[in-house]
Length: 544
Ligand SMILES: [Zn+2]
Image (cartoon, rainbow, N blue to C red; front, side):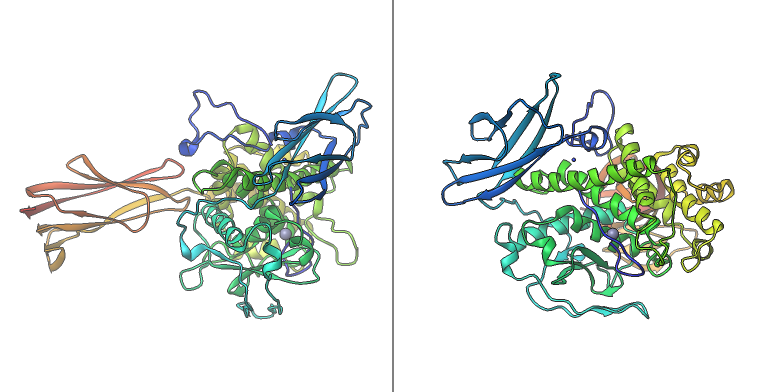
């Protein structure tokens, strides 16, 4: 939820598998997890832990199946024991030095079944910590942090911090690490086009003792997000945390014309809540499918999965509610009413993102990066049309069309008809304008060497006629840009690949012994498979 304006609530929490045969998947990773099961199947069984004794290994698990089956449930406790019975059920784990995944199966008289799983945790997760970029990390402080507002009129609340009692199961360092992974993933979703403070986007997780939810402080310095004790007391609410972080990122984007402060108020949710929902579940999707890369243990990934499944089911339920209650599109949360009229509308936008991503088997990352490319064309004229202080049919049409154009661009599919059937007031004129201005551009240039005489890696004299003479070794520097992000830069000498760079700054020390006239070439590839090339003829004299 977004603290500013009227803000409502947050959300939070399902699963499946993919067939990857000959199809090339972006990133070369075959997803092993997706949200298909949660989004497209109906489950009636849910289970939870009633009590757990970590010394004796005794657990009591309760549950509910709204189909009320008369056949006993099957309990696969994960320790080799399988038995049958109704709720609640007791079990004793002999070995309490590890964690277990309990699977309960319902059996119905028609022969069908349902399943639910939960983690029985006796020991903390084991993490193989990887080095992450510090400038986009999350800090969970055990000390007071004072915030100041970056935006006039937006107050920075006085907050405290989560003391160690909140981290008895999963320690602070692990929470910080997972959230920092999430932050890195979200920054990539936003194409690195986010407002930075001193070159960094460091977020603090702070505590608002009595608040019954979470909110984002996207406008403070440092940037923060907040949870109430209620949220953090029993377990780490991963999906909710990713949600608030999603607000922080999306409201601080695009870097030179941030949404925050321009769309808040009664009309904020169609942008801010839709995007926070999409970001939170796309983040969970990426973390779960890249668990090994980030060194995350199975139990921790299971918890993140369960958290995201619960919250995505709420998105699905709201979408179904939108359909079943007459498809009342609303981008304006009327201050005179108690209910939030926008709730089902923004959940429908998020649901449609997940539905299209799952049906296209594209993963969540590339569609979201594309969606952000369109949204990041936001400009002053759009701010006027979004009309955050006043509602009108025109404003509703602009807000609806902005989101539908962004989804259409994300999936390279015109979704106007689909959303018109959902009563979204789409303007063709605005749609065309927005789609036409969203372009993915990729550029590369060889910054060094340029037209100089270089001696021992230093440019000493500027040369006429764009000539380049190099004596000794030289560091080749490449500038590559794409509004969807650069995947890699290749450096060639006379068409022979010398180096592949995936991280900024793109530079390479050319130190081999070589004489005469040669051609340096740089090829940049962006995440949308666009290619840009630059080359330069040079004279080099290097004894190596
Ligand atoms: Zn929110």
